Every structure is written in C-alpha cells, then in structure tokens.
Length: 399
Ligand SMILES: Cc1ncc(COP(=O)(O)O)c(C=O)c1O
Image (cartoon, rainbow, N blue to C red; front, side, top):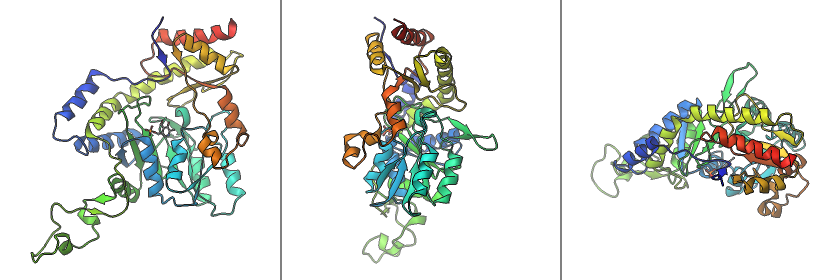
C-alpha cells in the first residue's frame, strides 16, 4: 500500500531545523530579534508597511476585532464558507455575525449579497466586513473597499489561505493580498498546512501606524514600554520618593488597556523566516499542481466545478465539486488518499444554529458544501502522487 497522501502537509528542511536550533541556543526564546526580523521580512513579502506577529491566526483575528473597537451588539458580515475563527472573533468581543452567501463560481463572499444586506438595513446597522481569501483565491478588495466606504465600514481581510496571492485591480495592477491598499487590517496563519508553517503562528498586516501601535500593545496585555506613549508622569513612575526624576526609570512600563498574551516565540519566528525564504518557490509548485488538476478535470462530466487555473490564486486548497462526494471520499481513503472538506458552513455549526442561523439560509454555500472536496495540494506532492490522485478519481467514476 502506498503511503498516506494527505490534503496538505508542511515541509521542514534541515535549514529550518538549523534556524530554530540557533535561536534555541541564543539569549532570546520569546519577543527577541527574530520576531522583529520575521515581521520585517513578512511585510516586505506582502508589500505592506507594518506586520505584527502573534501566536496564531485566531489571535490575530481577535486582536483585529478589538483594535477596530467591535463592541456588544455591533454587526459584522462574513462568509459561511470559512474556518469558524473568521466569525468567532466578532463573538469574542460581544458582536453579532451576519453571514452573506458565496458566489458559486469563485466560492468567495458574494459582494452582491453583501450589498443587498447593506441596502436593506438602516445605514448604521453594520460596522465591518470580513472577506476571506478562501482556498487562496484573493477577494477583489478594491470592489469591497468601494462598498465599505459607501457605508462607513472597516474591512478585515482574512488572508490565512493566500500569502503571495493577488488580484488584478481596475488598472490591471497586481494587488497582493494583505497589502493594506484596501483592507484596514489583514491576517495570516502559520498553522502547518498553510504556506508558511511555524507550528502555531499568525501575523497581522496594515498600513495604519495607529492600528499597528495598538496591536503591538494588545498582543502583550495592553502593555507599552515606549516612553512616548506613557500616560503617567515621570515623577509618579519611580514611586513615592523624594529622588528627583529626569526620565522614566528603566523598569517602567504601562498597561494602558486590557490586552492578551498572544505573543509568538522567537524560535517559531526563526522557523517562519526560514520558511518564508521558500514561500515563492512553494507558490510556483502549488500553481503547477493546480494547472495539472485543472487540465485533468476540465472536460470530465463528473467534475461539476473546480478551483481552476486562476491568475493570482495562491492554492492553499484545490477544490473539486462532484456528485457522490462521500463515495469518492471513502474510495480515495481506501487508497490512502486523505482528502478533506473545506468547510462545513459556519452558520450550520450547532453554536451558530443556536444563535438563529438555519439550514436553507445560504443556498450557494450549502450546495457547495454538499459537493466540495479538497484534493492533495502542497509543494512536496510528487508528480507520481498527483497522477495517482487523478487516476483514482477517474477510476471511481468510470468503474
Ligand atoms: C480562513 C481561516 N481563518 C482563520 C484561521 C485561524 O488560524 P489559526 O489556526 O492559526 O488560529 C484559519 C486556520 O485554520 C483559517 O483557515
């Protein structure tokens, strides 16, 4: 029997291991120079001014929701075809999630469905939108920005699936996901199946200095050590003493608002930096794999839909839509090909159903869910393995 071919897999090289080992032997295990270097390198890769490394993508979303002041009762729109964290971050802050259906061709949040929601509600009903670059296909953020501006909404781009992905703007220029040209904030995850693996890890990107500075504080308990930002005066900072004070003492720091411990460690950052060096190369390979799937399936009657060969797609996932999906899933599993389903629509999770969301609310998302399957997609997938996956799918429908 062949070895298991999963739908996604990390690739850890000797260079990665050396980079982590070097940091483990250094003076810093957390919040040292590797974090700063990772943030800098990542910002450069994405083409954005600021990046804040955090402990995972969910923490990134949570901090974004806090930084944008999501409060009890406020409503935010997102897609049901995403990992639950895209919606949960609003709930953490007491806000309300409103879903809008997907576009059945792109599998992304349908801007027309969002527009309809906005048009049908009093102007101040919503405060933000969280579009998701699902599977690695970049949302046209320029269009979303235009709509958001009409209604005075902020945008958090959930770009967990798409570092290096882009869309073409109206002028035909490449707009890389998370570059902050349109969204206020964007977030990434470094979970092992993602393009860059840190074990756990996340990043927030933005072009706004004020949001950047607030996020730095929020990731570490709301604490700052920046003298420029201190609120209490210098004399108070040394305690109740007659000593004359000309500057804040070295130990001094201030907790200025309620934050969290969402820090990434320095050795995880070293892994991130090392992985980032291969991110472009990994993307090239992912696009090759996608092209081959696309070519193999485009004239097959049993393939109802597929991710396709799309410019700028980052191919975290390659999705096919098929009839008899459960049968195919089980057949492939019997051949040690472990496909996956992304995603069970978030509005149908029991937690969200308890909040009033119902089956039938989002027909495109629900139809997609009934027939989608994510095929093996990772840079180290070999030509033989991919041929075997394609052949096995064809065999299932032809037997
Ligand atoms: C679209 C999306 N958003 C958010 C997350 C959360 O990221 P993490 O697992 O790093 O918390 C994920 C990760 O699975 C994701 O796929």
